[in-house]
Amino acid sequence: MDTPSPAPGALHGVRVVEMGQLIAGPFAGKTLGEFGADVIKVEPPGSGDPLRSWRLLKDGTSVWWQVQSRNKRSIALDLRDAEGQDIARRLIAQADVLIENFRPGTLEGWGLGYEALSALNPGLVMLRISGYGQTGPYRDLPGFGAIGEAMGGLRHLTGEPGRVPVRCGISLGDTLAALHGCIGVLTALYHRQAHGGRGQVIDVALNEAVFNVMESLLPEYSAFGAVRGPAGSALPGIAPSNAYRCRDGVVLIAGNGDSIFKRLMQAIDRADLGNDAALVGNAGRVARAAELDAAIEAWTAGRDVADVLAVLGEARVPCGKVYTAQDIAEDPHYRAREMLLSQTTRAGDTLEVPGIVPKLMSTPGSVRTSAPNLGDDTDAVLHELGLRDGEIAALRERGVVA
Image (spheres, helix red, strand yellow):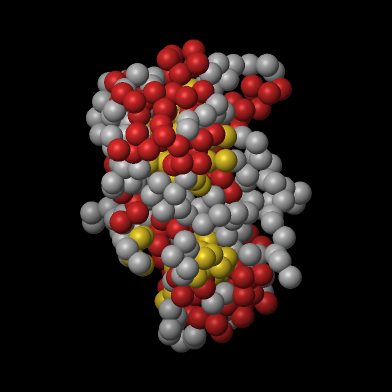
């Protein structure tokens, strides 16, 4: 029996032109594509998006690419060529959304700035992701997600006190910027449809996207002159909440709610601490955080992770193992929630890849197509613009398309 095709997503009918490379812009395009948008990815002929060759390769292509570019169509188009720029204008004239994450001014130099494009397409929503935004004294500086994490305040909080800040291990600045960009795109599309508004620019800076999730960092400095610093695996000002060693791994335990704390102490056979009047509230526990952490780890250190999780789960204390990729791949909850998907590449390989977040009840996201090879859809997209086979062949001969 044939497998039925996924139902059209919530963004079915929305056309997105993605000119971004690597992570921030393409992650935004990926997210919109998973919910039904038609995402046309513009890549330079010959090399394509550098992400194709990042990290571990299978059959010559990054396995990361297989996730980042699913549900997209690839057109290989030279944007530095005048003919290529003209084709881009024709493509954008029919689009709802343009995504780009070049350095500010790059598109303007190609005659593809917002003023020029909105004259062709007044409804165009343009997502611009850059290191520091389209304005301000830093606008022309090159920016990567890692630098955004540093200047957004995140890196100062990661790692152990007194040591060099550490990287969180993933390109968090890029993905935070992409998600903020998606919020902006959806808001602008709603405004355009519900209020008859024109299109507009969404200006997302990597450092600002990071700064936006930094919780009370700035208010604490403003009110008290307090500069929060790194605290290792602990949660500063909240106790007990930390990582604790077991015989065969590490668990995170968050026993910081008043009633949770009492249950945690009962579970680890430290009712004396649970009943201590000085520890009833968080302020008292913070003052004795080292003592509490030592008591908890004295209990976890002699047990396996599975035993710790079972006991604390029964006591309704929030806890979890520090997962590796293998742990995630073997976890039945991830599978039950369809967060582990089997995806076939265009080379015929099968990969397990992350599922789709968030989960919509009526119009869920889906993987409709695997990540394209470079230029897989060049002819189809150009035909949609009205170009004939002979014109496409001539453009290919001149290296404008591939």
